[in-house]
Image 1 (tube, one colour):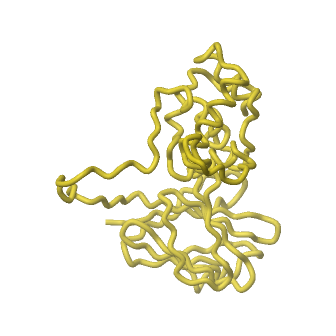
Image 2 (tube, rainbow, N blue to C red; image 1 turned 120 degrees about the vertical axis):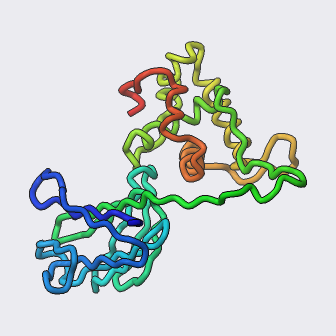
Length: 248
């Protein structure tokens, strides 16, 4: 059974890519400008003759950057800006994303190669039920208002803008009005402060430790929530309405 699917860059404009390469575990796909040396030929003067190689494994794949000068970026289109960089000459860099986009810099152009890794392997058993249960890393209640505030902060990046700044408090208030008519600057700011303590970005009021001042509190909350999937796109339903212009 194949492990990954590779979709080449479009050949002209917005033309849909119909050619796909399906790789079984341990199979390789070389890509570059030179037809004799590569399985996937990218006819662009800015692409190296032997640009790179993709090797499929069970549930992930690895990328070798054979270019002598260009760094390749592998983006996670579903990861709100998550990416890795593969330096020139780097061999066998593991890529864990289920959906990936290799971005090749090519003489002013950015050429995307999509790689899909649909295979998922999971532990088949629970490993026993004796003993005390493991405490959750982050405990959030999706029915509480603080979660709606967190969802509103994460919404712009989950809607497809990975580099969006977090909304202002006023924008969050406006976004929450359909589901929470009494939302105000004071109540939203209180929930943001509460989230900073609950998610352990700041010490709680019951401790003697005050900790350093937390600059960029909203940015830190969004980064943490998206990194650990505390808020997903499906969770935006708690906002109960279409995004307002101010929150985009």
